[in-house]
Amino acid sequence: MFVYTLKASSIKFFAAILLAVAVLVTIVAILPDVEVAGEVAVVSIKYTGIKTDEDRIEFLKQFGYEVKETPVDTREVTVPEHFDAVYEKYNDIQKAQGLNLSKYKGKTVTKYTYEVTNYDYDGTVLATILVYKDKIIAGDICSADGIGFMHGFEKPL
Image (tube, rainbow, N blue to C red; front, top):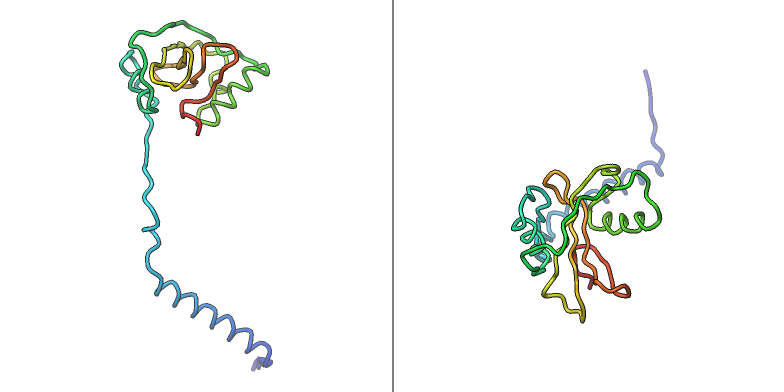
């Protein structure tokens, strides 16, 4: 026959745990749903199925940009096998917007450049899109002058 004894300190410990669980269950049951805190807009950006100029223009419209219908430049470019400091910095911009050029090292892609007509900037603003197999794999918005800016598709605040 086995006999197990409990000390007063053990009973107090289990009573404290039981009380804590009871309080937690009561709080969860009484508190209202917290989902009413605020509504968040869910935005789904379409990066695939980009085959025509219209598709590329619609892509840029998702970010609020209006562009001229005809690209300023269209060319085939090869993503380098090894990134130098410039490409690393450019890829950091891509990573910040959920893209990554590293997956396409050595691939030949098509680069489309459009002139943005509704950007609040004194100068020419260009939107560049890199497309591989009907999928946008990278891109940026930049000023055409050398002292301007470059950022991802989202306008900085």
